[in-house]
Amino acid sequence: MRSLSMFSRLLIVSLSVVLVCVAVLSGLAYANLKSHSINTRMDALKTQARDIGYLAGRLSMDSMSKANRQVSAVEEYINWKSRRIYDEYGAYTMVVDRTGKYYIYYLQDHLKEDTQKAVPSAEELSEYMDMALSGQEMVFQTQSAEGPFFTVMVPWVQYNSLNTQRTVMGYILIQTAAQTVHAAYKDMVWQTALAAIGVFMFAAAVVFFVAQQITRPLTVMAKAAGQMARGDFEARAPEEGGKEIEELSRSFNQMAAQLSTLEQSRRDFVANVSHELRSPITSIKGFAQGMLDDTIPPEMHKQYLQVVVDETQRLAKLINNLLNLSRMENEEKSLAYSHFDLNEMIRRVLISRMTQIDDKGLEIEVNFADDSCFVRADADQIQQVVINLLDNAVKYTPSQGTVTLTTREEADRVVMRIKDNGVGIPAADAPYIFDRFYKVDKAHTVGKGTGLGLAICKRIMERHNQQIRLVSGEGGAEFEITLEKGTNPGGSYGNTGAGED
Image 1: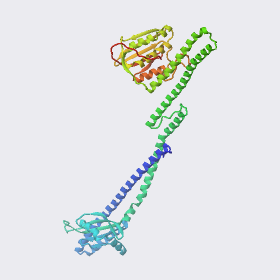
Image 2 (image 1 turned 120 degrees about the vertical axis):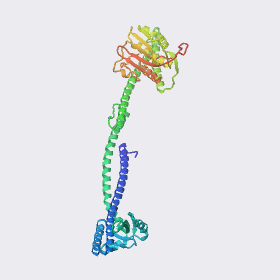
Image 3 (image 1 turned 45 degrees about the vertical axis):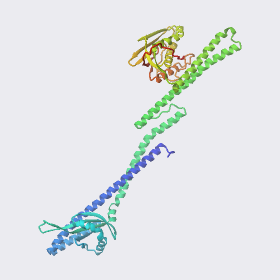
Image 4 (image 1 turned 60 degrees about the vertical axis):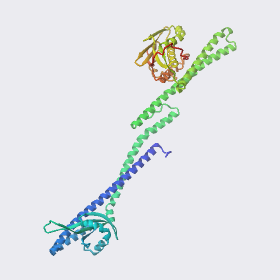
């Protein structure tokens, strides 16, 4: 079944289960109908035996009173009754007295001979005879020279003239061949079979329809997955079917949309990185070649060597960012939690960036709710987040602009915000700014970064089980991070050793 489609396998398994269930239920239904048919026939023969038993009792009383005319009438009625039983049920009737002598009330000699052949042996009847003479009615199966027979045994009684006392005089024996009884319900086999076939065909149609409804979305989804494997991330699955299939299709489409976004980000990243790598390498090669062939005079070598150093540092920064993000994605290094003063960390980061801040003439506003604000986190990584956010704020804030940093405590956490009054972030870009390789500036402006800074920040905060979010992108960007509240460990803040973004 490995080479069959899911639809074929589901259909085969379902139809097999339905077929087994229909067969079992049909067998049970047939067995119940067969048992009911036999019981109904035996009950009818019991009723006939009681009637003949009553007539036999009347015949005995009339014989004792020597009313010959009445005796003849009763015998004729018994003969008529016996013939009717034979015609209607194919059964033989015998009246047996207490001594074991039996009387066959039938005129045709050949029928009398057939009845005598069907009489069970004395050994077979001995057990039942005592029960019948005690007044019990019975139905049992016996074996005669003619084959298996169903036998009905009903006692017949005689009452005294006052009808106050009854005496069991013998029993009525009605026998019918088993094959006659079987023939009565033979038609039920075909009726049951036809009903079973009808039920199976209806169930097969329902199973086919349900299997098709289940597998069709999966088939479409499989085709869409094949298209995605070939690089077409626009393929989508229909969100229809059962609840589980619909949820699977929705998740598949969400995955496809994310892969499409990631693929576009990857392409943008390749373009950005290619440009970022090509520009400094071209500059370094050009200046070096110019100094070698004396295109650049010796007195200007120092100036252009400084440009080469700056471009080399920019390349090193790009490579470090890529390596840092890769390490964090793979979680190669566990977090080194400690308790430290976040406010003191921010002051030290500001001091390390004073050259860039002064060059642009920026105003720094620091609004701390308290002089000290202790948090529990990995100090090196949180310093990297603060550096990245502050560098972005300084980079995108125009000259003479303002950058604001605030911290405050809320219940069991600390909230830090960094706000600038620069160009801001367009609403269309806001949902993607934390994606890896995403860059708001699509013009590949030299020195504007590669879109890894915020992705690194987000990954660091996720590893701390904390949040980073864009509070506002209009009139400048404002970012917020949360950290777990810490305690004062005593002593000074110390060195974080965080690297440059």
